[in-house]
Amino acid sequence: MFQNQGVNKVILVGQVEGRPEWKTIAGNKCLCLKLITIENINRQGAVCKHAENHFIQIAESVVDNAASLQDGTELYLEGKITTRPSIDHKGIKRYDTAIIAHKYNIMAKAPAPVLNVM
Image 1: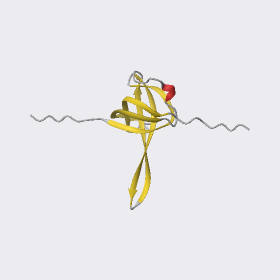
Image 2 (image 1 turned 90 degrees about the vertical axis):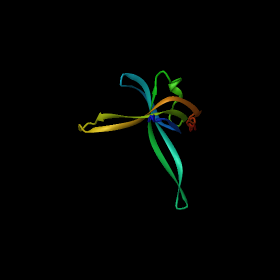
Image 3 (image 1 turned 45 degrees about the horizontal axis):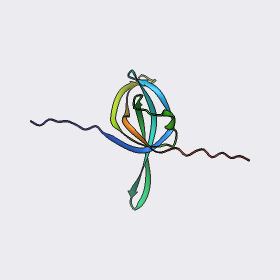
Image 4 (image 1 turned 120 degrees about the vertical axis):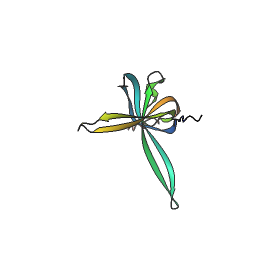
């Protein structure tokens, strides 16, 4: 017999944007961050950059050092995509899509800020 079993796996490499925040979602504490991925697309002979924003949730048990995940940190992660309903401030039902990360590796730390001392 044929059984339809799907695969829900996401692999992303990108840069953390902004400051990650701890949140409790569905009773689970997780670190939430935005990851930006950029790809080069060839359009009619011209190379264009295309950026995507991904909303990432990393369970507290998976996070090694939250302080190391700063704005600009280059990150490799594996996880799965999930969608859950929410109701916005106008009472309209919306669907939020996020990546639940099962593992991650820091590929490059965020560059240190340049201080102008005169």
